[in-house]
Image 1 (cartoon, helix red, strand yellow):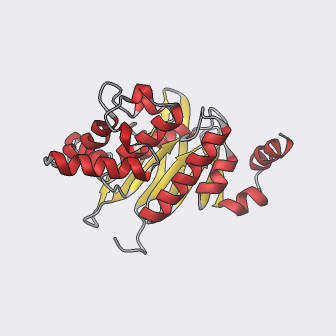
Image 2: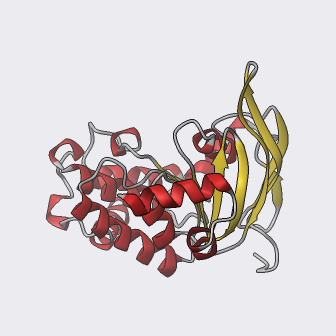
Image 3: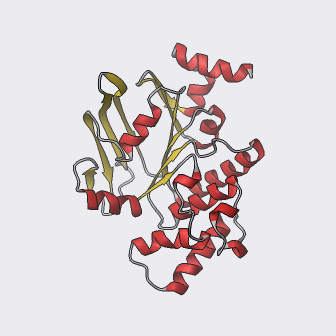
Length: 259
């Protein structure tokens, strides 16, 4: 990929639920190795936007273009369903807030990681198991538990397993929906350190939705602040959080300072 070309280009995208605005008029570009955080209160439109970007929801208007590993820019909402499924198994990753939504709970930890490799054509059992073991180690899950079911893991360990399942195919773009939500503070801190390390090591581009400004500050290079389905402010993360310009951004930041 050419470094001067964005990996994701979002152009005036919108989605309406009947007469209710989910989001509207959102445009931005994401470059290789960059992380963008989307923040706002519940109902701000950030989850709707993430669904549009990851092709889980069709836009009412606007376009989302992704530059794939062949350096072709594709309209993700114009390609066929099989092409979209292949994209989700290869170039994309999606980390859910609830790891159970991103795992198969009835198969082992190793099988959860290995399945994604098999989906792109890997067939050698030994190689698949070795890669699964390697990725469990990378996300700091005890490799001795490779044959254990995810249901026997803690919530934090399930989230680590979901991350391994997603990243084993070396995707180029990750979507993360409140990746540390619902976890204890100490578990959150360790998971955030892991995510920051993996994003940096892999040169991964990512879009992270969170209501937690501390998470945004730690992981995101740039920030998009949403309110009532619209972007009210965007810029470098530290700039937005240290010197917010929009009254709503100021309110978000001040509410954190008061806690």
